[in-house]
Image 1 (cartoon, rainbow, N blue to C red):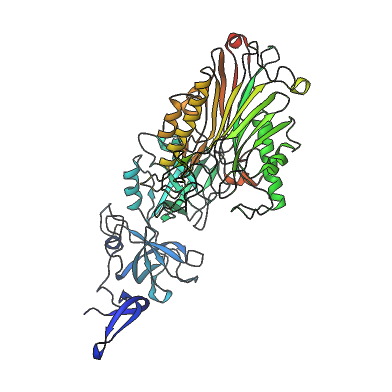
Image 2: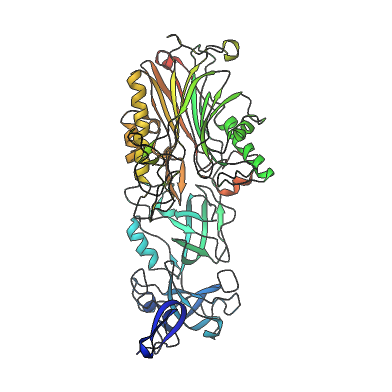
Amino acid sequence: MKPFLIIPGTIIKFPLIAGLLIIVSLSVYPDTTKIESGLISICAIQGSGFHSPKEGDRVRTRGVVHGDLDNRSRRGFFMQDENCDGNSSTSDGIFVYLGDNVDVVGSGDMVEVVGTVQEYFGLTELVTTPGDVKVLSTGNPLPVPVELKPPFSDKESSKYFERLEGMRVCMDEAVTVGPTDAEDRSWLVHADLGVQRVFHDDPRGTGEIVCVDDGGTHWIDPEVKVGDRVEGLLGTQDYKGGEFCLQLFAQPSVLPASQSPETEFVIDFASSPVIQLQIGTFNLANLFDTIDDPNTEDSVLSASEYQRRLNKRALAIHETLGEPEIIALQEAENQEVLQALILRPEIEAEYGIVWQDGPDFRGIDVALLYRTDRVNLIDYEVRQGCTDMIDGLGPDGNRDVYNPINAVTCDTNGDGYLDGNRLFSRPPLVVRLTLCEGDCGATGEGVVDGDADIELFHVIVNHWKSKLQDSEITEYTLPRRIEQATHVREIVDEILAADLQANLVVLGDLNDHSQSQPLAILEDRLNNQFFRVPASERYTYIYRGRSQVLDHILVRMKPGLAAVVFQALHINADYPVVFVGVGDSVYRSSDHDLLLTGFMSLDVVNNLPLVLR
């Protein structure tokens, strides 16, 4: 019988005399004191797949240290046995975890290690102690680094990086496609590819992106924005936090791209009597206050952080959006926060607020700002939906998509019995407004005659379910977004049934891409403004180097009206998180870019000059 160690935690039954049975809670693990005979090469430990064929075995192996992190928080080192089997499908390198923060080895040491093979959240490593690491020699040449040139195919790229796990790698020239993020990771592609931006839906795949982390002895400094070039990347291929990342053991150079102000198309209305309408959308990115709301899991900001966030967002409204007539907002905590925002000295226009508290567990809501000198508020309503989905999501879910529970809170079919749960954590805000003829302060009356061409219009502000709970293989959140889109589509159809020529604007953070299933439900009725701009401009968010559209403005205007201006204002997604702390800059005032669109009557479009600013 193979010997075993008994550890508290597992049920073991010991039969005794007289037919009695004693049950003890114990755990059983293989005896790790037994070592496979002889040396096992690193290549044999790594194997040719994503998991080690030696997992759980206690082995003895050798290699040259090329990434020394034993006296840092990582508590270990990378070593490599260059060309240990001549097979390119197996890695020559491995991480050795010591468990103690102690200086045991140095770069260039040839070491012999006795340890247990473990898969630590996807990283093959040897778990050992300082006493089981023997330095055989010092000053050995380091392995020749492999130049990183991963393929476009996502599947093949994963295999490519796995074959280099724990090995010394480099990238002489790279271009930033994803800025330094909150985890201090930057996302780059090899300069030889000629790629300037990677879109999430590239039919070739997005596997060419290289993640560069800050867990080595060096890191990219300064933080980089999209377009910056980085030279001299040298380090070790690691796997950490579900991502293959390069840990640096030499200092690279950063060659910043130019940082010019955003180019905006601004319509000069001074020469025309036509009443204009400009509408923007802005995700305020967790605009909380300094007070703890006991009814929500809100973030509580310091006074200085609260003022800094208000300042940056007010600057973005004034300098980037240009204080349009209407702004749809997402992620505002309450009316007091919105009031503090519109009273900032950076904002010159006078805005009214449309807001109603919603059931989001963090306390973030949608809202609408309208210029009181230009817009007359008719009415508004919040349009919550009811669903019978059991997905663990929404305001009534347990937030566990693997073992979902949804509390019964609403009536799905109107029969008087509660049989469903609320569809939205941030339900749509449906607002009816008119533009005032002249100054609203003078008459306070909305335009209703045909001369102005822009009459009553309906604005539906949205913030749909995020993709936070999705896994790499399952889109757990998609069915809820599909139902949310269907619900909004029903509101649109209801408005059109009452007035086939109604002016409609559906906008906000929809958390999905153009022509995705949820967006297709709306695009069947409304025109997505993003199709008006070049493909290279179609993004509002960058996730791990992949540019994508999550925020949208979709419109349907009565005959005689046209949306003549649309732009994604890229002041956030392309920029590193270091700008979050710069209070007097519009850059990184959110993690989403802002959108702006403008309307006017068709009979003067051809005569209206466009001025580049």
